[in-house]
Amino acid sequence: MLLKLRLLPLALLIVASSAFAQQDKLLTHFFYDKMSLNPGETGLDDGICATTIYRNQWDKVNGAPNSAVLNVEANMNRFFPGGVGISFYHDAIGFSRQNNLLLNYSYPIQIGNAGRLGLGFGVGMMNYGMNPLWVPPQTLIDPTLPVAGFGATSLDLNFGAYFKGKNYYAGVSSTHLSESLLQSSTIAGTQSYQSARHYYLMGGYKMNNIAGGNIDANVLVRTDLVKFSADINTRYFYVKNNKEIAYGGLTFRTSDAVAVVLGYSPMENMTVGYSYDITVNKLASISRGSHELLVKYCYYLPPPPVTKARHPRWL
Image (cartoon, rainbow, N blue to C red; front, side, top):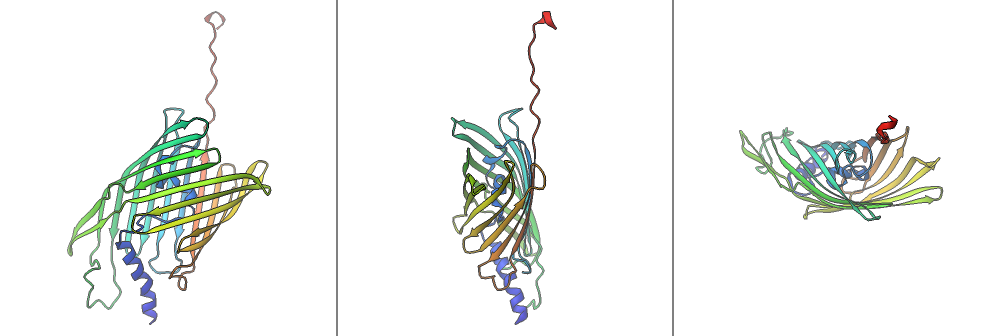
């Protein structure tokens, strides 16, 4: 009976990883991971920013998802119109491993005094591999389960539109536009993995000078037209000397979890964050929740020197 309880979560994860639904990573700090979901956001903010996030989902569940993300983006308007970025993320679920690497570009369009619209695309590659190692007994093998490992790499394309106003933002995007079929020949025959197109809708609003601080709300809706989920987040920022020093808030994810998010700025232009998800789905009796760590740092180039023309007579 104990063995069955240990294998049940793994079986659920294997089934989930072989289906089309929700192949993309899932992060509680989604409001710091906009670029990998919507390339239109790339470089709309000033400076050069690097963000890394690590997620340990469903702690203590064997084979549960582990995700790592690294986004680096830069506003290049000083040199040419637009923003550029590179996004990498790694997902490990059960026996499977997925790696995505994308190069992003966003072209900004000023919409009067309302804000800027970024139209962006991402071009890169998706790598997927599986190395199954089944637990005895190994008799009566299920033919629907892979018996040999495989790995393959293919093209990956993203597109997004992102609007940033004074105190709000909104975006719509799609990932895996190419819906690539990753195939590899093994001793067990041809193994394959079909990527599915995902669609995202995001938005947020910020209110300043509320109870001595700032409050923001963020929403992310995701679907692959098979499954649907949404994250709703709200945070309160502690402000000192007109700078946001720390924040705390809550995130609700439909049919999955309720999370506590905390963050602190130990130095200027740097943010570290942590979140803890309380599992409310069918794994609630087994999982010890999910943990997530965030580090973000931005560097701002000094303003270009001011040059003045002089008459040659006075040089």
